[in-house]
Every structure is written in C-alpha cells, then in structure tokens.
Image 1 (cartoon, rainbow, N blue to C red):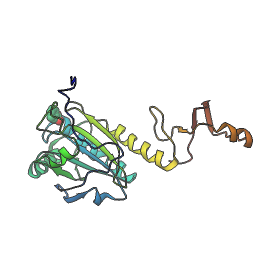
Image 2: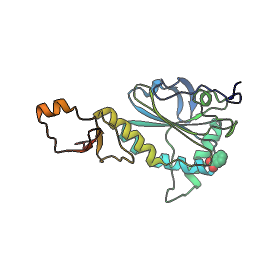
Image 3: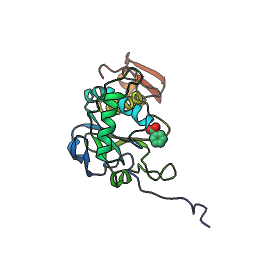
Length: 228
Ligand code: BEZ
C-alpha cells in the first residue's frame, strides 16, 4: 500500500544545481538569467504581489541595502507574477508616497521581473500551491558567480524576510569559499570561523602551536580571520 498517495513530488532546484536559465522582461529592461550575472553573486528573490504591505516593507529594505550587497559583489533581482505596468506603478508609489521606519523617497533600482505566466516562478519552485496557487511565496536563491545555487530559503506569504540575515548568509558563503572554512551558529563577519580538525600525527610531529586558534576539542576548532 502506498502510504504517501497524497504526496506531491515537484521538481525544484536544489543547493548545488545550476540556476535554471530564462529570459525575462524587468523594470530595468530584458535580462538573460543567470548569464548576465556571470562573475557576480545574485540574490534572486520572489514576492507574492505588488501593492501589498509586507512586500512593500521588504522592497524598501532591499532598496535601502542595495549598496551593501553591491559592495560584496552581489546584485539583487526580484520577481512576482504581476505585470510590468503594475511593477512600475507600485515602485513609483513607494518612492512618492510611502514612509516606513525612517525610510522615505526610496527608489528601487534593481530589476523586478514580470512573470504573469509563472514560467520563471515554476522553474524555481516559487509557487507552492498549498500556500497560494496564484502567487509566489517569499523565496530567496543565493547564486554564486558561476551560476550555481548555494543556499535557498522559502518563507510563507505572511512573513517578511530579515535583510540582515540575507546579507549575513551571503557573506558567510563568500567567507567559506575564500578561506575554506565553515561558520558557526549566529556567525557574523569579524567572528571566529571553524577550521578542520587537528591532524594529530602531523601536529605532534611538527609541534605546531597556533596562538590565533581556539581548540574546544579535536573536532571543534575556531580561528580569527585576518581579513574578511
Ligand atoms: C503582503 O505582502 O502583505 C502580502 C502579500 C500576499 C499575501 C499576504 C500578504
């Protein structure tokens, strides 16, 4: 007997996959994704709908932090299933009318994709029908300079994302790549990173004593990085 007869299996991109490619119209012109972003990181995110409050708060915060993402070689690309006219009118309203948490006159300069036929949203598993079959959920894909998906988050419609966390995840991925290290719980740039276990044979042989390292046990060692 199939106990999982109600289980729906849907193909969605996973960590380590190549980012599915597409061509799309955006508020900043046509894009070929991910080819136009080779050599740069991309935060590719979906939101449920224009002219909704949670999405407005997220877009204002993304736009306010865009420079911080650009500084670490990362571009932002948004998507919803609304059309270009709706996107443009909504972003104009945000700039001209909305003041929220000290943010005002906020201009969204990164591309916002129109995806009325949900072609792109479906390729990326952004429409999750038991949440809402007519809108994308709040997905975030962290895509590296080679076009590989490195991390993914999905939030439901009601939950606004934490932009500091998205930035932290990006910098943690970049740090892991650059220094071949891992990052512990709640890591922030400047904190110690995790380094591989001691090779006890070689450590004893070479009598290596590293003062910039902390050893909690043989399997758990951290180290301060010189630069981030
Ligand atoms: C919002 O962004 O406020 C929102 C969008 C879709 C459903 C619920 C909330």
